[in-house]
Structure formats: C-alpha cells, structure tokens
Amino acid sequence: SPAFARLGALLCGPFGEPHQGRELAKAAELILEKPGMRSSASNTIFLTQNFCYHWISPLQDTVEPLLKGYQVGLEIGDNVKACYCLVGRMYYLFFTGRTLDSIQQELEAAANVMTQLKQEESKLKITILLSSVKKLRGLDAEACDEMLDSILASAAETRNNLSAYVSVMKLEVFVFFQQWKEAVDLVQKAGNVRLFLSSTFVVVRYTFLEALAYLKAAQSSSGWKKRQMKKCAHKTIQLIRGWAKNGNVNVVHYLRILGAELAVLNGKKEKAKESFNAAIAASRRIGFLQDRALAHELASAYFKAQGDDYWGNYHIECSKRCYQEWGCNKKVERLL
Image (cartoon, rainbow, N blue to C red; front, side):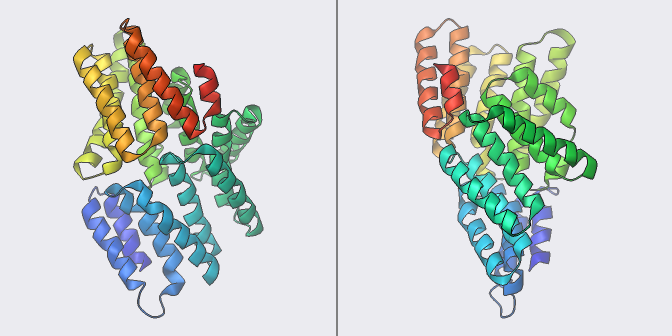
C-alpha cells in the first residue's frame, strides 16, 4: 500500500501527473481494506493526504483524514507516521485560514504529545509553525525570532528539510507584514526550497509567496533589477499556472492575486481593478480567510496609489475585518 502511495506522490509532484497520482493514491487506500494491512495505515494516509490529493482536491478535504492517520498511528504503535500526519494537518489548517487562536491551542497540545512520544523532528516543525502563529498574533515576537533562528542554525548543520520550513514560515510573516525587501532577500538567499518540500502543499504555498515577493520587488525597482525581478516572477508564476491547468483548485485565487499585481507592474489599470475583484471573490470561494485579507490589503494599496481614496478606504476596512476574524492581532494594530 505505501509503495502505491509513494509512486502517486511522485506522479503528483515531480512528474506533474496529478490525476494519475490520485488514482494510485486511491488504489493504496483500497489495499488498506484488505486483512493484515492495518500496520501500514498511518503511513499510507500520510502519503496520500499529505502528498497527493491536494493537487486536484480542496486542501480542506485533507484535514480530517490526516487526523485519522494520526489516531490510527497511535493505535498501532506507529508513532513516527502518526506525528507526520499531525504535522501535515497543522500546516494545512494554517494554510486554509483557520483562526490563529484555535491553531495555537492545537499546536501547543501537539508539541506536548510529541515531547512525550520523543518525536523531535516533528516537534521542531510544530515549533516553527507555532512561533510564526504567535508572531502574527503579536505574542513574544523576539523569543519567536530567536527560536526560528536557532532551528535554522541547527538545520544547516544537519542538512534536513527544517530550514525549508523555517524559510516558508518566515516568508509568510514577511508577506503579511508587507516587509517586501526582507521577503525578496529571504527568497534569494534560501535557494531551491522546493527541492526540500517534495510534493506537499507547503511547496505550493511557498511558490505563491515567492512570486508575490518578486512582483513587489519589481514594482519598487527600475532598470536591470526591475527586469530581473519581473523575469523571476514570471518563471515562478508559470509553475503555478501549470498546476492550475492540471486541475489544482487551491491555486486559482493565488493566480488572481498575482495577476492583479502583474497588471499593476505593467501599468494596466483596468486589468488591475478587474483582477483584484476576481482575487477577492476567488479567495472568498476557496475559504482561505487570510488570503482574502491580503487581497483586500493589496487592492487598497493600489487604489490609494491611484488617488482613489474611496475604494482604497473600502478595501482596507474589509482587510481589517478579515485579519481580525483570522486573529492576526499584530496586523490589525498596524492597520489602525
């Protein structure tokens, strides 16, 4: 069963064949129903839900199965894969816009469980996410930065994928706090983060944030640097377009947001207006609350730059409400 699931993950990610990968993932789950296969249940669920289904199904649909994978893993004594499932679930809850206070509570409980089970690598991934959530909420920012830097330093020595997770979550915070210089600096220094994130949704999220950072850098640059940043943005956006073409429903609103910022960069005013409206509508449909907040905020900046205070103020108020609902208290403070 895990062999089918691993092959499905390869097809979904590196080989760009998500529909074939999904069929193999389904086959892996069917095999689990046969007698004597329960011992591989947690591993199979981890592989199918973490690496396969999100490429063409709503990310929200993976959250409950990953919880089941965690529970089954504990029941059969597969603590490693149980914790892998729990890590995947927590990150996917964050990416789908679950409220930050509820995520923090679950993360703190998960960290305690992983301490008891002596699952250090999984605990560190939970700690990376927890530190980022607390920063967004305006809690212990300095301590959180020290924790992330410490994990990054140790990850560099052991050469594991923890540094990639730190890069993703640092980039999340930079983007939501509109720290665009820091964002593009991180992207350029981090290297090929996608190489270490395999076929998870984390790689999809990072690619979106990377493209947005390049677009904002291009907007604030001129000459050779502007052309270079725009070229990097185009290259990254092409990856996301490819995923959308293959049926990834989770990236539609990403493309709308990036399309709006690309129109701003190219001076296409009507296209920018249409694209921001489409981005907000798409973010609402998929249910990613934090991305709707971001889309409204970016739209507000655009309209205010055009001297349109009415729509600028409208969108910033909408953004505040979304950030408040999400629980991003530090951001709300900055927008007041």
